[in-house]
Picture: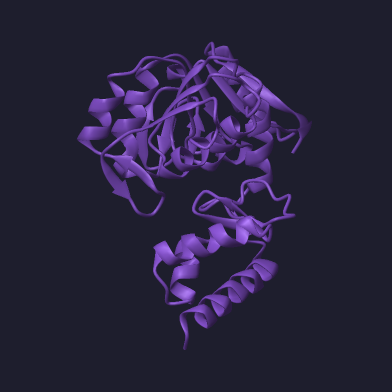
Length: 265
């Protein structure tokens, strides 16, 4: 098959995939089309120039797509997606022009800064490859990615090098997320590899902001990161669940400022 014909067929199949799925990743297209990642990126660039799609971190969405958080790893089907986006929008209100931020990997942390897109002069340090690739496109922001070993599952860096590099920075605000948030169990995560990096990030900011959707409240995950008092602010969803409300009240009594979304989830 001639090179031009092969490319035309690939481009057509990419658009067909997008029309069905609304969002696709580079790695997914590379597997399906048995083509290198480099070639797929060039194909996406061409289709974007033709106005047929919009490139996002690690993939693409249809040019007219209004989906939020459909970047690589943050698909429309991600559990509790709407809850996470609501928390992110609320937390974005805490970010001011000129802030220096140090943040962990995760959809909620990522989208928090995304929603602060109109802030000027942000300086961002992150352990997330997805976040770094996406946010570095903002012309007025400085983005720094930590070095270290890459966790292929969630696309974040970890290990001694990452922890050592965190110690070089002091940020205005840390933006972190956890898999479990509880008064007694404290802050817990499923990311065994990222525990030490999380601890280091919390220690290198003047204000520590925890973004966690309401399903994380009252949960204890496998790896302990710190105490609930290691954060200054918790941003979560408004709820009418009596047990969740009791836990949030106890957290507030520990001196943590609890900020809830405007609408009950």
